[in-house]
Amino acid sequence: MVAPEKGFYMSGNTDKAAGMANEAAGKIKQGVGKATGSEKLQGEGAGQEAKGDAQQLKGDAKNAVKHGVDKVADAANKKS
Image (tube, rainbow, N blue to C red):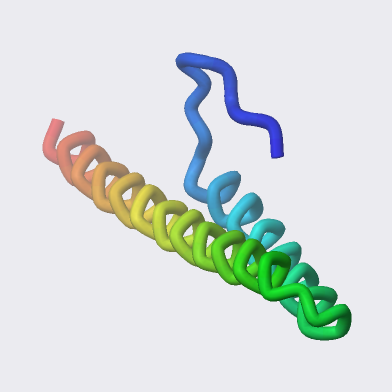
């Protein structure tokens, strides 16, 4: 996966998609590692899957914060 450029902001949905891709790739690596008897590949796959889980949680958190900010902004606009 290519790292975002400095100053590039990833949305919550982008983080979730990247997380799902990393999680899937990690599961595949683990399966190939099991099939070939490669503990190294199994470990790499487990790490990549964990990274994907964390990215998805980060995306969920970003979306929750954005939703909260939007609600506050909407309430403020209604008072104006």
